Image (tube, rainbow, N blue to C red):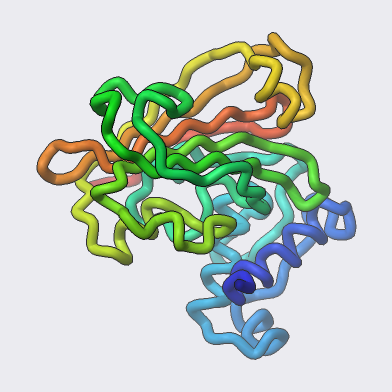
Length: 237
């Protein structure tokens, strides 16, 4: 299954930025120029520029335009808990390492709120940038009873919060935890790092309106490639 059009266009511009073809400060096309260049609607053009900005690749300025940001990759931590998220939590290509229905006791990392014998969908993916450098490992656990057909989806492009919304799953809250951990030999190999290297692990727990768990996700992030921040408006009520 081919990637959505907006994602293919965004990936094209991301590749041009990361390759150095568009250095920091370069101006990107306006929404109108993207519409004309690709024959797309305004909503698609807006989404392309918005997601490039969310990925920290560009900066958008009212009346001035959109410009390539500095070389450090910046990620907004609020993306990980945004219920309206439509693109991937961490932009880039996914490689599906494993996808299976297993007992909750078998998943990594453990999900203590689920009974050991609970059937769950367990998905392990590796994230790459456009230069094929591994950025992160993603471990996702979803109760099978909540999403019995989850593994039939296009797992290379799956975004869980978007999936829940499309299937009217009544998610209510999402909480993120940040843990310093040491890479074991297996994860270190997948991230092209040495075992024992300290990394940041982001864990996200998403809950249903009735208080039951909808999803447990964990992201092991390769050090030195991304800079994280939180931004919110402080202008008035």
